[in-house]
Image (cartoon, rainbow, N blue to C red; front, side):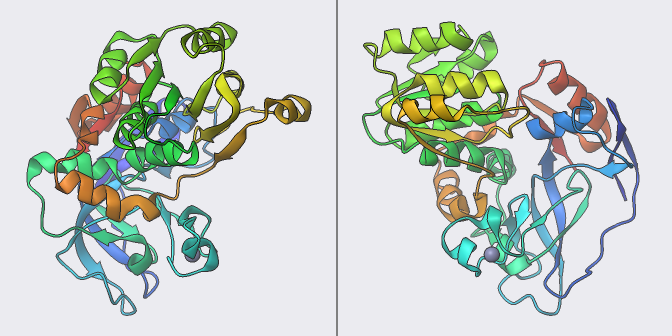
Length: 338
Ligand SMILES: [Zn+2]
């Protein structure tokens, strides 16, 4: 089979790879219906995280179960399934607490930009949907595999409640879906921080009531201005840079909540500023598995359409262009048809 392989900075190829096989009896092999490029794939693509060997890419997936290991009991061949980028047993104490991305037996799922994918711990990781979906539902179902679940976790960790004021730092796909999540959770006011017109437009479509184009301290000042000097009740940090994290902390009201899901790159926090900020901090790798049943229901019933973040659809063979378009910010998120 042919899939994507990253060789080094901005050097991604579509080339022959060995098809995955069942390695452990708890594995399943999925025939991928669609996959995509994640914002976090851009870190190694740009050489900020260095790959030391040719690396198969991709960790967002949905598709049909092709084969199961001998110990798999709940997942069946032929089912349409979605799973998270962290495989989890869904039975250990961390999983039972709802933190499947910290599963005692967590394994990263990789190499999803390909026709076939091995998923470890299939019973715990995969969630089957009621029926094989129509084509138009695939983008939204695929989004649940990571980006939507991550935006939802950001909003959940930021304690978004009906009527509350929410600020979202970051206008990438996760930030935009953080806006959608906050709307779905009943936020009264949603301030999206973005300086890109196409992203502002989608943010408004997803429920943003205000747009702030300023960044850093000016962005903080603007949030304060919009909230009578108080700050936002809930802030979602969806970038992971020192600037965005400080902007998020300083935009949160005293006693407010900050949900942070941007993978930190160079973020170092000063204890004293945190101490006096008087805020709740909750974040980390999103336990997407916890939210899958609920989010599948919302997509299945037409309540949410997170697939709108895919503004570029390419065949998998054009994966290099898919990365390039996102790297150059010509695309918010690239869907790859297999
Ligand atoms: Zn576990």
